[in-house]
Length: 193
Ligand code: GRF
Image (cartoon, rainbow, N blue to C red):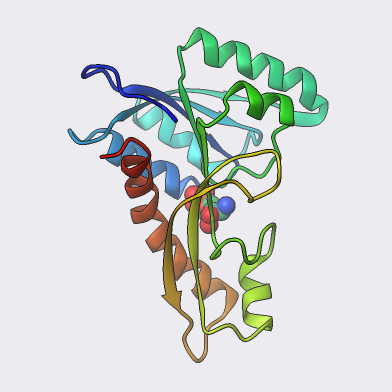
């Protein structure tokens, strides 16, 4: 668990792979007085990730890595995190699975958001699988990251009702709106705020 020291905000890195709408909501949150975190670094595995633009707009340092040689890259990332005094990581639509070694180095300090009501529907294509199984509800989960995919301790969840003519796109959109609210709330909870 990350501890708050005095009034200084916890330096946080956000890992993204795509649009970065969760990154956007986290940046907004980090600028509020009540936020225990500041966002100091954006890491991506995708040079074309739309979300990287948010780095420039908000003057946040960003680094992009080709994850082909993941072991080597993770060591480089660990070095950069240390150099920037990063003490917390939020995965936000980050599509790579971090190694056990990496996770151990940041034990209890990595959060992830997943678009399902975990432990149901871990992994990819969640919305499609949820609809195929005729579920009545889906939702999103913020959890701590451990070495098993989408399996760490759950911090918060939000349930949404599936409509009659729901498609995977409409469901993704509906859940994303909730994700943007849930992630900041989960961060506050992590700090007992
Ligand atoms: C979100 O639904 C997140 O839960 C999932 O990927 C999506 C990323 O969206 N892991 P964005 O890049 O934050 O807009």
